[in-house]
Length: 176
Image (cartoon, rainbow, N blue to C red; front, side, top):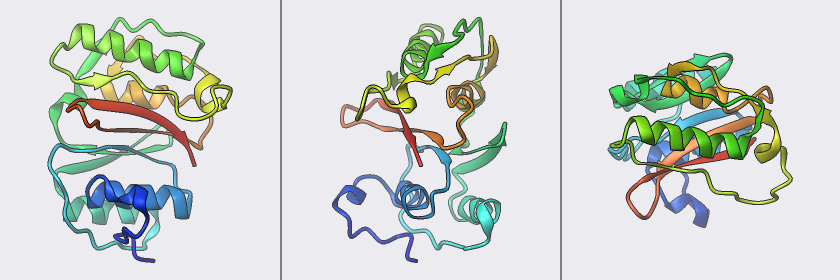
């Protein structure tokens, strides 16, 4: 399978890394969470060596990225230190995911005004478990740890943070 294939119209936005992650999710049903870097990745040579081998190969080819397995969730994200920023005082308990995501973004922006993250939009059925499953976030942790907590218990729920046409970043939830 050519993971750089961009024949689909919806695949034309983003860079090679975002295309690769999209294909992993849509074709192989791998629940990889993804935060797109500001820098573009032009070409990737995919390696079929299990998920961790694949992620290792990706970050070797695109060293602006790193990956972690947090609570059994794979997250591919930029090496930028902002993602390691510790946030404390988060008070989100047993709240539907979409509402929790919006509240989390609001709380983060109040603590880190330079952080240009927009609240997650509703895409699709508002009754979907992607939006309605209750989640709880730890009172403190890194940005990435909190994002993983927003996934809740369903291993098929994923998040993406990518640039919007307006220059900020947008948090999306989905399911593989």
